[in-house]
Image (tube, rainbow, N blue to C red; front, side, top):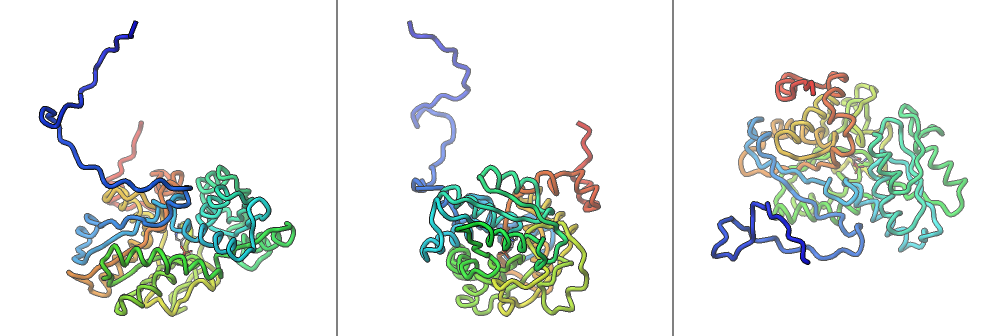
Length: 368
Ligand code: PMP
């Protein structure tokens, strides 16, 4: 006997003639992907509306949202590219080679993603400062993780770079793809990130703003943009406590900072500072408050260094007097999912002194 099922559903499909509800045309379907590594790149460009308006900005303010990449950050692009190029050069073989990389986490995730799909052992060395969320994702991807002291100088044996170098000598068939001076770091952005920006903007970009860690993103994008839009202004963002900004007189302190993924105590070879027209120094408070505004006002679920880049973009637009008809692109490197226990947490924001009046007004302390 067929079982009679009760029907409580409020909507029943009908014919287009008698169905009283509105329907929409579905978008053209993207093709089936061979592996998740094919879902890296082609990230959305999104208009930043309310923040621009409340800051009195008249030019077009656009956010390149890199958190839509498969591993959740801009660094997936170089993770895949550095592995593919090493395979082409015959330096690594699946099932045989071990990939070791010192990283602030996101390159590690990009590499571990490629390693998981392709069958490599991955060992990631990362400073203690980097979030537990990144560590847990790396572990889930099968990577082995070694934490190193945040305060170690880059060339100290106990730093993430020093430990990676020692392991590479000890472990047979191991390589460091070395994002700091691998040419395929900036080339990945020259070939893809910059091309996408140009395509999405119809070839017209007046200013590009990005933070720098290895500098691969800003270098690769700036090189292509300057070839195609010679008048484009490239703005680099560097936290107080880092030494990447020029002139060197901007780098006045050696404080530690909490924003992850940007700033260094040495100049990586992947960063070509000749391509950067101006640098802006940033602070943690400005960065995290702006990241929270991007989430709260625009629904853009970005990470802390995205807040840094957007805050700096607003300063640069005002400094350069960019008005109507001008177009500014800001690169947002990763997702708030990397920072659920950090700046997404209201108590963390308060206990670090990162809140302001607007934050407190919009984020009442909840007792539930
Ligand atoms: N933001 C975050 C969160 C990052 O992980 C990185 C990579 N270190 C960057 C910004 C800077 O990117 P790049 O290394 O290409 O300069």
